[in-house]
Amino acid sequence: MINNSLNVIDLFSGVGGLSYGFYKNKNFKVLAANEILKNMAIAYSLNHPEVKMYNMDIKYFSKSCFDKDQKSEEKKVIDIVVGGPPCQAYSTVGKRLLDDPRGKLFQEYYRLLDELKPKFFLYENVSGLLAMRNDLHGHIVKLFESLSYKVNSPVLNAVDYGVPQIRKRVIITGTKLGRKFEYPNPTHFDKKKQTNIFCNSQSKHLRLTDAISDLPLITAGMESTEYATDPQNDYQEFMRKNAPLKLLDHFAPNYNSNLVAIMEALPEGGSPRDLPEEIRPSSGYGNSYSRLWWKRPCTTITRNLGTPSSARCVHPKVDRALTTREGARIQSFPDDFKFVGSRSDKNLQIGNAVPPLLSKVLAEAILNHFTSY
Image 1 (spheres, rainbow, N blue to C red):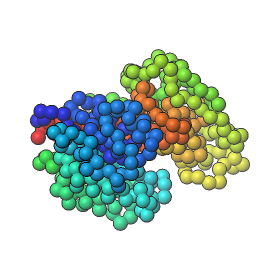
Image 2 (image 1 turned 60 degrees about the vertical axis):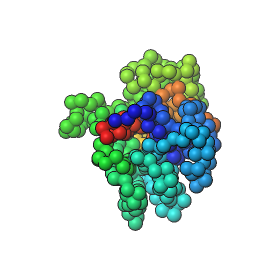
Image 3 (image 1 turned 90 degrees about the vertical axis):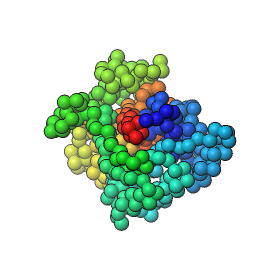
Image 4 (image 1 turned 120 degrees about the horizontal axis):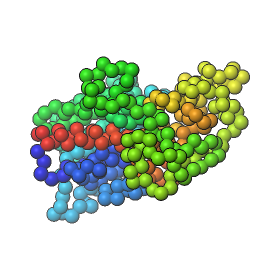
C-alpha cells in the first residue's frame, strides 16, 4: 500500500516514451530525467514540463547532481528508476558490436542504481541483447542481482499491449519489495493464433490501417496539415484526443528516379526478391527496400523510418516511406506529442523510443506491485 506518489527517475530518457506511462498516472511523480542529445532533451521537457531534465552525458550524472537541486528539507527518496540505454550495439538489425561504447552503458545504469538505491527498477532493451556473445545478458542480470534485487527479464512484444507494431523488447526488472513482480498480461492477441488463455478478455492485434487510415495518403513531395477522415476506431480517437488544430509532421520528401522505380515495382509486403533483376538493389539487409502490409501490424520501425533503403518502411499504398507522423502513430505517440529539430531528428526521437502505450501498462503493473506490498 502507498500513501504518497511514487518517485521516478528516467535514465537515457529520449523524448520520454518510457516516462509517458508514469507521467500520466497520478500515482507516480517523475522527478528527473537524463538525456545526452540536446533536441531529445528539449522535446522531453516540452512534453514533461514538470520534470527536471539533466541534458548531459550519463557519466556526469549522479545522485549528487540530483540532491543539490532539491531543497534540503525536501530531499526525495527515489522509489523507481527506469531507463533504456541506447540499443544499437545489441540490435539484430545492426552488427551487434560489443566493442561499441553504447553497448557498455549498462555499467552507468548499474552505477546509478547503486547510488540512488530505488526499491524497483526497469531496464528496457532490444531482444538482440539475448544473442550477444559472452552472455552479456546474463552478466547484466548478475550485476543487478549483486545489488540485492530480485531480477526477472522476459521478452515482451508491444503489439500484445495495444501498439500497432511488432516490437520485441527485453524488459529487465528488479525489486526489493519481497515478492515477485508480476508482468502485465497481454491485452491484445493475434486472431490467427487464438490459443492464448487470455483471448476472451483481449482485443485483436492492431494493424497498420488501424493506426494511420485517418491520415491523408500523400505522395512524394507532398505535405498535409489536415486529417483525411474522422477517427475510424478507438485507437485513432485516443491519438487525436488533444490534437492540435493542424496535423503536424505529415510530409514526404522527393526521391531519385531509381528509388521511385524500385518502390513502384514493390508489391504489398514485397522485398527486393520481388523486383526485376535490372532494378534490384545490390546491397542492403534482407528487409531493406521493402513494403509494409496494410492489414497487418507494422514491423519494427527504426530511426530510419523515413528512408526506403532502410528496414521495411515503404507505405503499403503509396510509393514513399513512412512520414514522421505515421511513425509516431505506429509507436503510439499521441498527435499532441511534440518532437524537435529536423525531420531526421524527429524520426530518431520516435524510432528510438519505448512505445508510450507499452509504458502505460508497465507503469500500471509496477503500481500494482507496490500497492500489493
